[in-house]
Figure 1: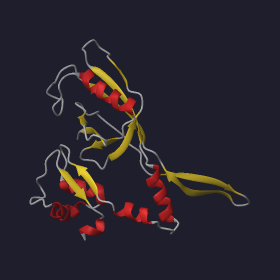
Figure 2: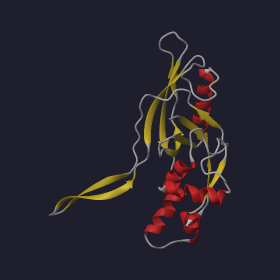
Figure 3: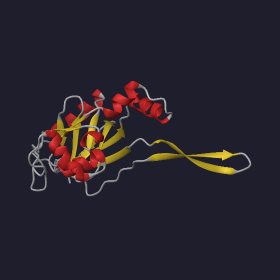
Figure 4: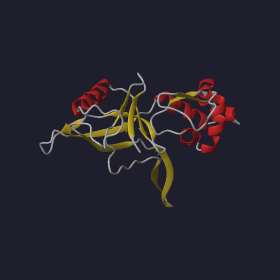
Length: 213
């Protein structure tokens, strides 16, 4: 398992050199509770909860046998990239390989410092899910049954996924469609001869599920 951040705007990618010993994320829908006259409280589905998490990472003062990827051994170079993204308000994709986590986020203030005189840096990242207002509006329109042409086009829009280290086509199909077995049809759609052979940086086109039927 490895944690990546990828800029949606520039496609620049940052692999965190050390994966935390544990992480937890929260997805789903909030519950709205209303106090109904005469009948008491009643629960209703609320709005989708915004992913709002905090993770701490170790940035060693040099590349070591437990660091991952092409870590340069310069912790403050990593800090600078994170701070630049935070200050620019860039939308990033948080990707945790071997899990379904692949979510657009914004970085809050980046807190970092040293603890033990080794030169190692500890950085704490606060991440909140990025939500496009246009996409939310289209979703509400669909639920009311008054579909607009733009909403239909949005639902059918083809996505492009950039492969990162540790990805498999099975895992990508599971993340995008909820069904890893579609990897063979996804491979055919992309002209990939061997569904078991993909490489970091490769672009995988993910069409509407109906086109893989």
